Every structure is written in C-alpha cells, then in structure tokens.
Length: 325
Image (tube, rainbow, N blue to C red; front, side, top):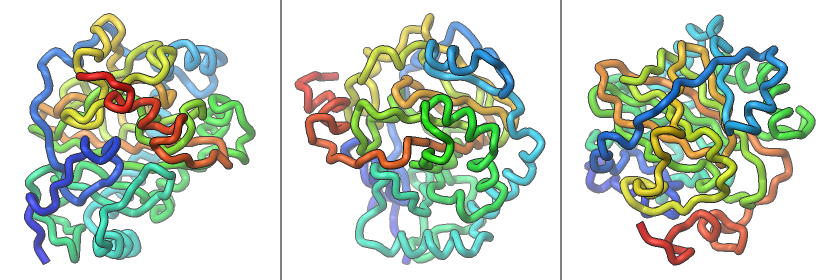
C-alpha cells in the first residue's frame, strides 16, 4: 500500500522533541545562511593520548581521526545492506514496525529497527526498504545487532574503554541507549538544527550521556560535517522549541567564535557530551554524507516521564518554562 508523503508527514518538531519517527520526514524551511559559520576546525587526537578526558571535560567533545579507517569498507557494505533491504532480518523487522498504528518512539532507549526518508519520498509502507529509494534515506535506527561489522564497533575495546572513562563507570556497566545512521543526501539533505541530545531522551537531566558520531564516508564542510559549540556543555540545559525541528532557537544559537567544525576522514569519530550543542547545515554538495551515531548511558539509568520535574520537556522545553522563540 503506497502512502502519500502528506499522509505520512508528522511534524518532527511537534512530537515533544521529535521523538516519534515517521517513515517520511516532514521537512523544514531553509536555515539562515550564517547559522553554522565556524571560527575553528577540530584538532584530531588518538585513542592513546593521555589528555582525552581532560579535553572532553573542557570542550564537551573530542575528535579521534582514523579510529575505524581499517574496517570502513566492511562498515560501508553493512550499511548498504541495511539500506537496500538486502539484510532480510532487518528489512522484515522494519516492515513489522511499519505495520503498527503509531510510529516508533525513541526516547526510552528501545533500539527499534526503523528507517526514515527525506520529505516527499513516496514509500510503500508494506515494504519500506527498496533499493531504488536508498538515495532518499536520511536515517536508520536500531540496526547494530543485525550486522557483525557494526556490532564490532560497539564492542571495540578502545572505544568501550574510552566511553567508560568519559562516563566514569566500569566498562561492564555501559548501556547502548541508541544507535542511528545519519545519511544526508546530496543537493538538499536537510539541516539538523542546533540542539542538545539530552533534550530527546527520557532520562533525568542530571544523568550523563556520551554520543559518538563516526564518519562512514568523508565528512566535509560542503556535505555538512558536524558543528560543535566548544564548551557549550557547561551552559546547562538550553530551551528547545518546535521550530524547523525541535531545536535551540536560532537567536540563541552559538556565536561564530564558539563554533568548531569537525571534518572527518572515513572512520574518524567525535565523542561528545549529551549537553553539548551541535548541529549540521543542509548538504549543499553533490555527495551524500554518511555517518553512524551511538549514545551510551550508565546501565540502570531510570526512565522518567517528560513532564516530571526533572524530565526532558520540563527542563529543556522552552514552552514549558514560559520562554518564547
């Protein structure tokens, strides 16, 4: 059954943080041209550097170049199988989720297999993953257990050791809260406005979250590599509003002097605090930008309702706090 983009549209911004993910994105208006201007490029490090934790605590992120460059071909091929439906187990599970009456919600750490396409893509809800639609995919979720090459990244000893240090907990207490692939199609793959990731998770605002963004192909200034606000994690929770997305208001976005761009070669990664403001502009190049993204928390972190006193909409929601954008 072919579902029209209009029927599938569900405003990302209107769903209390964009956490219900429809098969087809609702799209958004163009962003202001200078919103992602930067004053600096990130300095790459190595897993063996002694000052990684100190730099992370100071800046809110660290960059490790060529972390997975030796296995990037396997990662790329695994991602291709997932996107085209050639991983039959993943494809079948996405079909099952698509048959449910409501789109999945990713606030609670349920790693549900899912796909989302760029706005305007005609998708068959009975068979969402089709090879001819692959260039229009903007997001995959809940896939890491389906492909050994990607599962190996999640369990990589160097990465696990570093994330456990950043979360200040034993490695065996790490919990993979979310896995995503962020694909920004060429010539218009849409912006992800400035935001803090913890504004999207149903955990207490005081709980730590570590994000990891891995370049599957080259991430450049032109195809919308990450922009990070250096030291922005120290600002605490910032108000988010339903605008082009669930986002920090443009008028409160970081000034150019605080913005660091993070171009990466394939296999490079950035680890960042769940409170660090970051975003990506529209992909204006003729090359797709492909990335994996993971979030870890400490095992046993309790889920709380968004509107509880320490819940995400109570803490991050601009409207809930009487603010305006």
